[in-house]
Image (cartoon, rainbow, N blue to C red):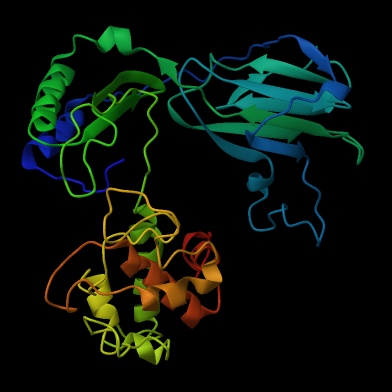
Amino acid sequence: MNRKHLVTKSCTAALSLLMLASTSVVCIPNSINQPVFAATIKRSQEPAGQYQINESFPIDEKDDNPRFDTWSLLDNINRKFYGFKGQGSVWVHSNNPKKFSLYINGRNIKLTKVGRNKWVKLDISKYTKNGNNALQISPQKGISASDKIDVKLPYPVLIDNTKKYRDNDTFKAMDKLIKAEIKNGYPSVQIVVIHNGQIIKRSAYGRVNAYTQDGKRIKSAPKVTNTTLYDLASNTKMWATNMAIQKLVSEKKLNIDAKVNTIFPTFKDKASDKIKGKTDLTIRDILMHQAGFPADPQYHNNNYDPNNSNKRKKDANPVYTQDRNNILEKIIATPLQYKPGTKTIYSDVDYMLLGLIIEKITGEREDQYVENHIYTRGAS
C-alpha cells in the first residue's frame, strides 16, 4: 500500500456523512421466564474456540484466589458481555445444574432439563440487546463445595445486510464524493459501516499500490476489493509512543528539549556524514518530524537501493537488519536527508528512535511498558 497519505476536505466530508445515521434505544420487558434448549454434547467434546466469558462458578472465597472480589460480592456472580439484539448463545456445563440459576439481562433461563456433565448450547437471542448485556450465575440453597457450573459465551457475529441499504441516499453521496477523490489522486479507500451488529455498507475504491515510490500514478494497478488487506500503519505512534512520551514528560523523567546523545552517547555525527545534525538533535525535533531522517529507509529490506528506490538490487541496503538489538546502530548510520529543523518530513525512523528512548528510560520493552503503565486497569 502506498505510504503517502493524502487528506482533503471533501474526503473528510464524505466520511462525516456517517454521523447522519440514526441510532435507536431498544427496551425489552423483563418479565420473561422461559427455558431455551438446544443440542447437547458430551464433556469430552467441550466446545473449543475463544469466548468473551469462559469461567467456572461459584468463585471460591480463598485468600489466594485472584478471581474472588472481596469488595463487591455481586461481582462474583455477574459478568458483562457485548452483544446484539436478536442473536447470541451460551454454552453451559454442570455436575449439578439444579443448584444454579442462569440469568440473561435479568431473565431467568431455566436449567431443569440440562443433563449432568454434558455441555449444552442455549439460545439467548430473545433476551439480548445491542451493546452491553449482563449474565448472572446464582447458586441455590444447599449447594455443596463440589457443585460447579462452567459457562462459555461466544463473541457476537456480524450479519451482512448491505442489500437493504444499497439505495441509501447518504451512502450514494459518500460513493460520489470518494470516487471524485480517487479521480483526483487519492490512492484507495475501503469502507465498512456496522450498525447494531449488521454490516450495512461495505465498499472498496481505487487501486492497490496506486503510486510508485517517487509519486507517479500506476493506472494498471489491480483494483482494491473488500478483501484487500491494508497495513494499518502508524497507529502505535499515537496510541503507544506518544502516550508513553507524554507520561514520562509529566513525571519529569524526560525533557523533550534534551539532546538524544544525553540518552544515547553514541548518537553523534561522523566526520564522513555529508549532512550533519545528529549531535545536536533534540527529542522535540524528532516529535515534530524535523529530525532530518528519510521517510522509510526500509531496514527490513536487504534489496532496497536508497539511490534508486524503484529498482530492487541484491544486498543494496547498507542499513539492513533483522535484529532489534542492532537498530540503534543502524539509525545512527542512516544518512540525514536535510539539516534537522529546516524541514518537516514524516518519517518512521523518528518514532523508532522515540521507542528506543522510552525503553532506555523505563528499562522495559515499549509494548510491555505501555501495557503495564498505561492500558492496564488501575495503572499509575
